[in-house]
Structure formats: C-alpha cells, structure tokens
Image 1: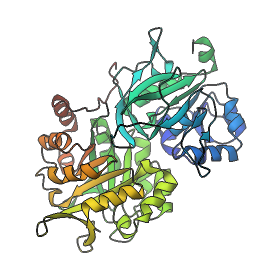
Image 2: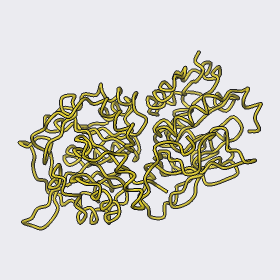
Image 3: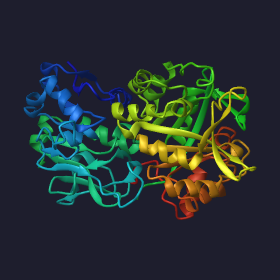
Image 4: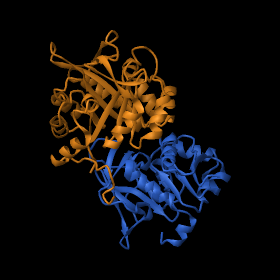
Length: 215
Length: 263
C-alpha cells in the first residue's frame, strides 16, 4: 500500500502528477481500487478534459461513494478540483449541468475573461486567503504574488471556501477547501519550485494533522 | 497578473536537438533531456519540442524521450511533429506532455483539430502555423511540410484565414512562426503578429526572429502576444534567460519569478 494514492479516473493524464511526487521522493501509486484508495494516507484526484466525461468515468468505476467517504486529506487538481464541487455548468451530451461529487459546497461555471485570450493559460499569481493571520496549510511558505501554472476555461467563483485567489478578467478561486477536501485549479505538478512547495505541504498532511489543525 | 511566457524551442531530429537557419542546414545543439533541464532551471516558462523531420518523412516522433522529459522537468511542455491521429496524440499525452501541436497534418485535414479538441479538450491542442511573407502579393501565406526543404510547399491558405479556421475547429493556442524571420535574429515580425493578434482569441505564441532582448520587449508590448518562442539565441547562449527575464521586468512587463518570494 502506498502512502499517497493518485485516483485513476480513467481519462486523466496521470503521468505528470505521479512524476512530480516521485521527484519529491514520495511513496506514490496510481489506482482505481476502492480498498487501495481508502487505505491511503492521502489521496490525489487528478483530471484533465471535460467534467461530464470525467464524472461518467468515475461513476462507471463505482468510485463516487468511495471518494465521498474518504476522511484523509484529498487534493483535487485542475478538473479534479472542479469535480469536488456540487455541480459544474460545463455541459455534456444531455446539455444539462454536470452533477459533481459534492465534497465542497460551491459550484463551477465559465470564467469571465473579459475578452482576454481564452483559455486562461500560463503563469498567474496567487493570493492565499489569510485566516487568523495564517494561510491554509496547503499554502504555508507561499506569498502573495507567487506564480503557478493554470490551464482552464471554467472556475469556482470566489466563496467562503476559497483558500487562494487568482485573477484573470475577474477574481476566481485558485484553490478551495472544505475540511479534508482541498482542490487547486492550477497545476502544482507543472509549477516549478512554487508548485513543489505546495505538493510538499500536502505530503505533510494526514488524518492526524487534520484533526490537530483548525481546518 | 498573467505573466508573459518565455518559451525555448528545441527542434528535435534523430533524437538530438538541432537548429538550422531559415529551416535549413541543421546543426546538432545537444541532447534533449539535459537541455530541457537546463532551460527549466534557468527560468524558462514552458518548452516546445518539434520533431522537424516527422511530417515530411511521413512518420511520427520517437516518443521514448517524452516520458524522460516529463519525469525530469516541472514546467509545462508541448510536443509537435507528425501527429496526425487521435491515437498518436493520446500516446504523447499519456507519456506526460501537456500539449500537442499540429501543423502540416491540420492543413491536410482541418477536422483533425476538431477531433483532438473533442477527445482531449481545447487546452492541449496547439496549432503551429508556418507563415511566409509573399512580397509579390504583399500578403502572408501558409506553408506546409517545412521540416524538409524538398517537401515544403505552398498552401491555398492566407495566414489570417487559417488562424480563424484553426480557432473555429477548436484549437487552444496558436504558434505563429514567421519563416522569413526564423533563425536570422532580425526581430519578430511585429506587423504580422499584430494583425494575427487582432483575429486571435486564444493564446498566441510568437516564433521566429528573436536576436536581442529588445526584440522580446517589442513583441510583448507592441504585438501583445502571450508568449515568445526562440531557439538559437538560447542554444548559443546569446541571451541568458535570467538576464532576459529581469530586462523584461524592468521594462514593466509581467514576468514570472522562478522561486517562491519567501524562499
């Protein structure tokens, strides 16, 4: 059993995320086995592509309840973050909003880029949200203005669950969290030293640190 | 703010990085992975790898190195060269490339852009365009199969029309390579890039002609491109990337800091 398990969602490019954790020396594996996922110290929910396709794949693998029942730290990356919300307005073949995993009480809609080039692609700046003068543990050591790599057209609007902001046409949630569930809209695995720091912060988390912290 | 990106381009031929002048007379620059690592460490924001022989010789890129690059570097990279099917694209993305770029095969079959978009999403479909200033007609036109001088040919496309068509088909980014300027270091074609910018709603990468740091400043400030791609000035050490990024910051352009600010 690996300490850190990347969920094989069936549609994502998993190599980059796995390589990033391997570069940090983490004990990491990729799995769609409910037993392996549930036993992990921490879990990654990756994702590229569209929300409807990703949710369909997760449903086909019977992983919806498995993910919803996780109590250890779970990090959603990019589309993985979006899947953690209640629903996305990204539409599939049925032309309806996509019901997501409902782990974080917010939703996802198209980013209003105000005529800036779309998708939002490239390195943009983070503003970690401070609570009691402290950023969320995921952003320990990260400053206002640090750059991370984004590629997306949809976003989680700013809400009570936003733990870091960015801005492209409008301010939006660069990261969101609710208890053990955390998601980042950017790609920490492609964000050089800043991204490595964020992944290292996640690797320090476990059920024990969660219950000890205020999060 | 979204940073302007500095993108070294590594032209790959037979497993080595090469560079020619105006797409000809290729000389070997070095091995792929060490060069990629060097550029990532120096602060490159993204890398592009072109297998410049692939399309012309009717074969796809040798992919074993894509996985090795993905294991070693922690910035995004794009792979181009002879990708003409969903399956070829899927394999390269599975190896860890963030984007795939198509050029000649998209000209032969524009629906390839749409099919890649539908399968993998807009964000990883880049269209490369080799644009040539035709002095006789005073217009910009698209060339195909530029990786091999003998195979290079004109197309029916005017550049601005093809830029619009590529977006209609669903590409997520455009790399505009101005062939008259490539490898001769006389500066980016600001006039042409400005025209393309005005019809380009996806991120636009300028390519071809970088020779000095001023050229980068001009292309960001005057043509408002999202990224500037260059090869020889980086391979030959004419412009060190850290120095370039500081120069652009001093010119008031938003450029990424490579390290966390608190570090």
